Amino acid sequence: MAPPINADGYGRPERSYRDLLWQFGAHLKDYCSNCTLAGFAYIANSRLHPTERVFWLICVLVSSLGCYCLIVEYQRSFPTRAVSIVYESLPPFSNWKFPSVSVCEYLHKYQLIPKYVDYIGSLGVDRDGGYPYELEVGFAAILYPPTYNEGTLKQLCPTVSQCPNCATCPSGNFRQIKNWYGANCSDVMAECKLSGQPFDCCQYFQPLITPFGPCFMLNSLQNNEPGSEHWLNTDLDPSYQKAKLELGMKTSVHVSVLNEEDIAHTAIVPPGVPISLPGQGKYFQIQVVRMVNDPDVNEVDPKIRSCLFPNESPPASQYKAYSFTTCIADCARKMQIETCGCASIFVSPTEDPRYPDCDLDGFLCLESHGLIKPDSKLLKNNNKGHKDSCGCLPSCNDGDIQIIYEAFSTYNQSTTLRTVTISIPALPTDQFRRQAIRTRLDVVVSMGGMLGLFLGASILSAIEFIYYFTVRPFTNMLRARSARV
Image (tube, rainbow, N blue to C red; front, side, top):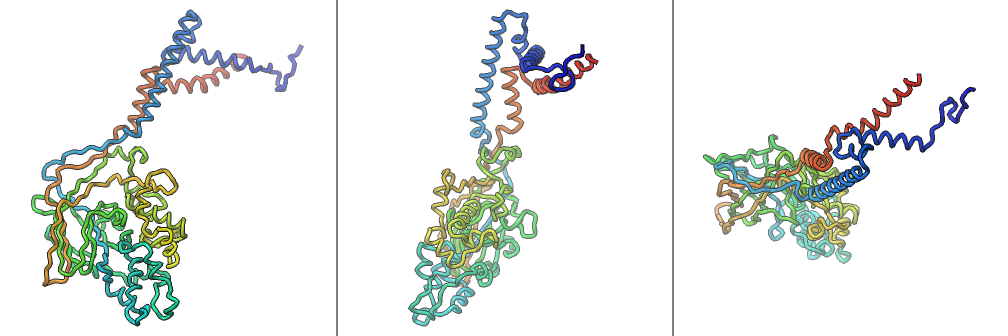
């Protein structure tokens, strides 16, 4: 008699779920009997007394729990122990490395450069028919952020209905006005010397719009790159060179020293001095302690190492290199865009259609919300977790630069140049080093060590597990089919 045709239509006997479960149990027992994991063979050995098998089952469970707890503790402590910063000594007579320098336009008693004075005079007169000094103050508050005070624009820039012929602030195009009438390098800088050797100021000091205002930057990653024709070699040999930079200025400026990736910012003013009067001279000494990073630090997640490298600038940033100050500027621009639909030109170094520049109405909107210079908000709310948090991390290359001595101003009646001298008086003796304590390889070694200690596991154990539940059932099925044939 022919076998009955079942649901599959091929005459094969239909398997029940109980049969499949029984077959899986037998396959699992075969795996435990032959696998290399410690203790599993004793549990699967039916020739042993049940007490022995239960004993080994308890041992395996306790070992698994211990391994799990140790791995969880390792993961919990990883963020705080993955990276360390050490303070190490340098070899004697190490070369000098002069930091980057910013020269920013600075108003002394609202003394604008002649180009701006002529432009403001062309806008009209005041109520008495003279030069519009009040308009000059309002105009300066827009183009020179350090001079801004709360309420300046509302008080000085709106149209005065009682004086229809009086000058009023421009309605917009402030970036173009700055480009047309602002000072260029030759209007600001006259002479430059490094270690007594003169160099072309305007070749190496490149313009950059910063939250501090219009600046000229020496060796900045924001508008330059090492090896270019505009990058000045500031590595100095102490055997015959002095770490001294001498600058001669034609106008009032603020001179600062900063790291290569940083920008001048009103919220975090870098070490430096303002200089304003003709013939005035200032001298100050700095101490520079560099930060270097081991190559393995790049492999650590930024949230764990708690810093970002200059090449890790976020896509929304308008700056070429990441730093804490650029992140604060990006955060200010984001706040301004979300509130008023536009941003100040000084938090956008270049014109970008994603971030439209504010016209006069936009600046009045920013002023009404306290966002023209939101320095305290940006710093107070940083990394606090709420919606106004900037979440800015420091730069991984952020070294320590401090002014250790500043002399009294000197005055030379025979010249109109303003001179600033910056000196590093002592050879560098120490530096910070950020090193990775736990890299990806360390994670693999540590995890493997814990699994091997508690369960006797290895890479081959993982391959063995995959083999027993993929290749082995397939070969068993082929062997059974060949036996039927």
